[in-house]
Amino acid sequence: MIISIGARADIVHRYPQWLNERFCEGYVYTRNPLFPNRITRYLLQPDKVDAVVFCSKHYRPFFPYLERILSAYRTYFQYTITAYGEDLEPNIPSIDERIETLKVLSQTVGKARVVWRYDPVLLTPTYTAERHKKTFAMLAGQLAPYVDRCIFSFVETHAKLKTNIPQLLPLSPAEKHSLAEAFAKIAKRAGFMLQTCGRRDTFPALGIASEGCVTLHALGAANRCVFRETLHRGNRRGCLCIESREIGWYDACPNLCRYCYANPSAAAVEENIKLHDPHSPLLIGTLRRDDILFDGIQTGYLKNDGRQISLFDL
Image (cartoon, rainbow, N blue to C red; front, side, top):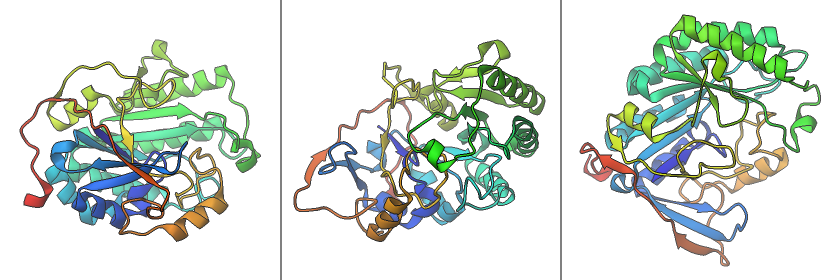
C-alpha cells in the first residue's frame, strides 16, 4: 500500500506532531468524505506500507522526525514552490525560505526522492505569463541540482475558484502552449526532467513527459527497489498515479491557498482546527458514537526489497 500525505491538507507543515505520533503508534484513521461516519483504519507498520509519499509547501517543521521515517520507510517527497505571494498563498513562508528548506531536504533524503512541483499555473493581472516564465527560470536555476524532476499543471476550474480569486484570467490553449514551451526550454538548459500532471494539457511535441506524478517506477528508482507491474485506476479521473491512501481531511489546511480545491470554506477550516487533537488517530476530531470502523484493504506492490525494518526496533 502507498500512503499519501498532503493531498487534502498540508500535514507535514501544519500537523507534524500528529503525523509523527501516527507513525510511532503504527496506525491511522480516516473518514470517508462521502459517508463521514465510515472510518477506515490503516496500519502504518513498515511491513504494511510499500512507500510514503509526502506533498507539502514547507517541510522544515517535520525535520525533527524525518530521520526516523527515513530509517524505516521508503519515501518520496513532492515540494510545491510557485510564483505566488501572500495574496494567493497567505500562510506559508517566503519563496527564499522554502528554497533553502528544499535544499536541506534534498541533501538529507537524496535528490532522487525530491520532486519540485510548480502548480497550479494560473493567470491574474499580477501573475502574468511573463512573470511565470521569469520566476520559473529563477527557481529552476536554484533547484535543479537538488531535484529529480519538475511537475507542472494548469489550474482546474472548481466551484469556489472564481469566488476566491475574482481577478482570475482565462488561460487559452495558445497561452498554455507558450508557457509550456518556455518551461521546457528552461528545464532543458537547467538539466532536469519536466513533466505534466495527469492526462489533461499534455505537450509531447515539446519533449515534456506525461505520466503519473507518483508511479511505481519512480518510487522504485528513488528507493532502489522493484515493484511488481500492476493495472490501476489512478486516484481520480484522469490521474496516472499509482493508487494511494490519503490520510488527511478536507477543510483542514491552515495554509488557506486561494486556489485549493481541498479548502472550499475558510470558516470550516477554522472550526476544524479547533477539533484537532494531536493524540487522536483522526486528523480532525475523534471517534463518535455513530462511527463505524473498518480495516482498510492494504494491497502490497513490492516485488524485491530487503531494507525495510520495524520502526519500533530503532
